[in-house]
Amino acid sequence: MARSVVQREADARDRISQLPVKILDHIMGLLPIREAARTAALSKVWRDVWFSLTHLCFDNLFFSHFHGKYMKPSDDLGEYSCLYAINKVLLHHKGSIRKFVFLHSRIDRLTAGSLSFHMPKWLRLVTRKGVEEIELHLRGEAYELPVCLFSCSTLTRLHLCSLYVEPQSSPCTFPNVTSLIFERVCFGIRSLPNCAVDAPKLKNLSFLHCEDVFHFNITARNLSTLRINGFYGSKLGIFLPASLDLNSISTLIIDIRILEYFLGRYTAKQFMLQLPSLNVEQLSLRFLCFQHDAAASAFAC
Image (spheres, rainbow, N blue to C red):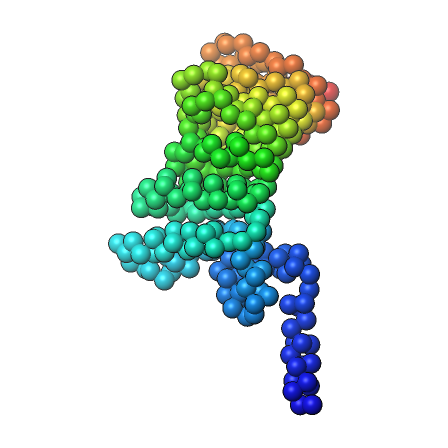
């Protein structure tokens, strides 16, 4: 009798664990990954949810735990512990992974060198588990996109931030990617003009404060939204990939500096910049005041 009462009270206290697995996965996915791992110790139910968590986010909060634990700048143990923890999580993971995030704003030489070895392995693991979204923030490291990304049929969204993208050595395809975001990315010089990245289902393409975008050879025949905020380049008047067809774009989001290039105005060196052929239905101009910009006002009218 007493035992059944205790059991009923325990069941009442653990009603959350009786929720559907999808809801438990969502709850655990809202937690920082370190707290999610600790939650796995509560019961077998939560442990199973942890080993099959569909959203893995290794962000600054995750890395700050290791940096706080190993305070000495000369102590490499903190960096190695980070890499070991990520390897352990991925190798013991069961089931599918919908989203994989790697965000580390204070990568040092040790981590950068180790990432060139570990990152391709991590990406191979997540692409084999049906990943749909990938976000990589590597803070200026030179990086050639691994082949596994292009062969991943489940990947629909890719966000690359603060890294140097090496040119592809052979033609590649993003078969089902619909959203591609480059943020503070520098594109390397391509030696072979035919090494293009084909994205047949790409709908949304963003270049946010990127450098030498024109080196990135991409074709996206179904592109509908193009966003360009800030750009840096070594060639005057050239900032978009030559292979990028703008005819299909219906939404264009640009800032005031780039507007002049689309208008085909003369530069200080008197080079005429060609106006692309556009069929834009929705135009969004960033950091713009029409009252004080005659060219923008004329364009808007």
